[in-house]
Length: 498
Image 1: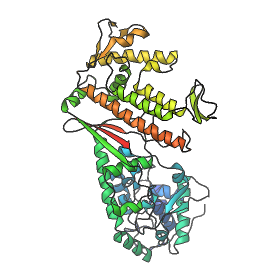
Image 2 (image 1 turned 180 degrees about the vertical axis):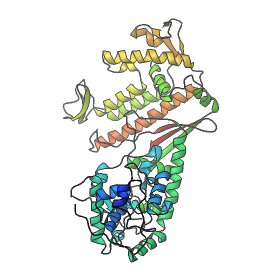
Image 3 (image 1 turned 135 degrees about the vertical axis):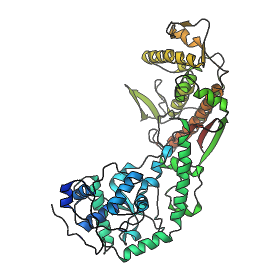
Image 4 (image 1 turned 60 degrees about the horizontal axis):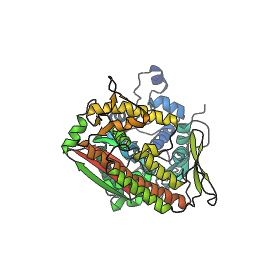
């Protein structure tokens, strides 16, 4: 394997700390010195310079650095390990990590990254590259301008040569910096210029202060979380536009750093309803401490069979009426068709209409509301699905009775082991919800919040379809409802897209 001639600097070199005598003999000293790492320098830039200064290949760099694959520069242990290894200041090492400034790592507000961009390209500032510098800030997928020069970022490509993804990314950075900076990888006047740009930046301190507030707010919400809705469509992660929109609402973005953002995301409303300590105490005192979702799912199911339906049923029917009135005479161009165990959307001629066994987008939306918050018997369930619901209901009813949330009727048939017995037609009428429980109002409010969020999502989904989007490829928010512990009781939070 060909090894480039190393570039030696007239500075004190660092001896690698390793317990492997073979490595110590092979690489007794490295061409690196205290202060060689620049503030906020990207890992790609560091690897590229380290390889070039020592005239080694990527494989030799991996052996020499002795770093594990899961090393995190935001970890105190790992950053201290690297600081000692390279004789660098630990705070400077930590500044290299985007973990500290990337919203992808922002607790419950993490977002889905663009895998295409992450795999094939990286962003860089042309002016910074002329000084042989690439910042970790340039790698953030949401940033559109260099925080030091306020110039638009450009896209750089990974090397097209052989090797794995890591090697190609480092080689691509080598090619970029060597082409744009005649003195790279040697230090000198370029390092002085980079230090001046970083120290004189007005945007960087403001962004770092704001990101600290964002992390603090998101960490507080995450630490007190009892439950977060997973939504009726099964989504658990946010897109960038939805994540940054919520973070923007938690901590307003200073106008000074707004130009850095590629997109400030969606606008949201925040609704908070507080519940007294008796509700929290009742919830936490339940036997075996069941998960909130376990109770809430049962509550929604049994509500379809109660003699006195809970208030959220009125909101459900109102939401369905809104969709029906908007739909009018069906002119939909899409039909949800069953194909064995799966369903898929198919474009149809609206003049032909939707087949009786299929559903247009409006019919699907109305059915989804019914499935989640309506009466189970109104759904088109197979015998196997009905049997599964029945079995689940019998097991959960025994638990709810033990929690004091459900009472069996006088004509209920209960086996010695506590399980209900009966036929499909009468077993659901054997239970009555304990409306005197402090938890009841909380459960009803959560259901109402869910219906509010679902209707907004469905209306935006239908808007997108009518604007030409395919039904399966539309960005819908997730995790819009959150139940949290507070000093005085509980807080129920609802995020609503404007």
